[in-house]
Length: 110
Figure 1 (spheres, rainbow, N blue to C red):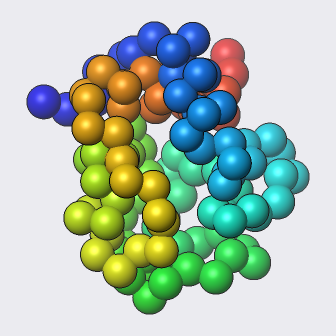
Figure 2 (cartoon, helix red, strand yellow):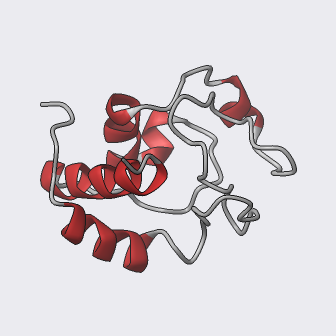
C-alpha cells in the first residue's frame, strides 16, 4: 500500500504526541532535537540550514513528499540507515496517512 488521504484531526493528535517535542512546523520555527519541518514538502533530505544532519541523511538524496514520508515514517532507521532520528516509526498505514494528511494541510493551507 502507499499513501492515501487520512483524517487530519487524528493526525493532529499524532503530531502533538509523537512529533512536536522534536520538530517545529511554523514559518520561522527553529530547529529543535530534529529539523524544522516548515517547507518540508519538495525539500531534499538533509537540507535544513543550521541543522547537523548525519551523512546518511544528507546522502539519501530523496525529495520529501507524501509517498516518501509514508515509507520513511514506518521505520526511519530502516529507510535511512544511520539517521539519528530516534523515533521508532508508525507501523499502521492509517496512522501514517493521518499524520501526513495533517502535516501537509498545516504546511500547505488552502
